[in-house]
Image 1 (cartoon, rainbow, N blue to C red):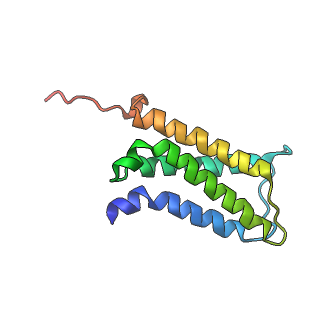
Image 2: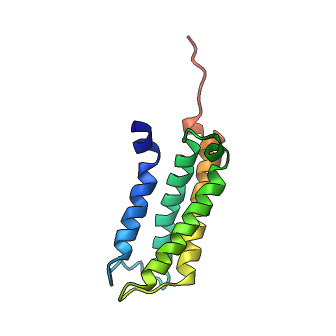
Length: 134
């Protein structure tokens, strides 16, 4: 149970939070002063989701999930983003945009790829394992 909480709970909790937030009408987001600021928010939130998904699949006990962690993170994240856009289309005061989903997918791909290459492939110097000199 502890492994589930540390490995899978972060991405499940974020999915629940996104779904709840998507259920409310007209939630004001801070204006970044650019016309596509909502896309940046989509990119960042779904990017974090992509990181959590890649991490969760990579650290799971199932060999298939470990082996295909990046691909599964992209598929699960993109499908969740698509379902969230569909959900928003039914909420009064909210709308669904294809470009929001594109921003979701780009965030997922870039962050999951970053996790895959920086941690799973052990290329991030701060987290490299070092041999003990005992």
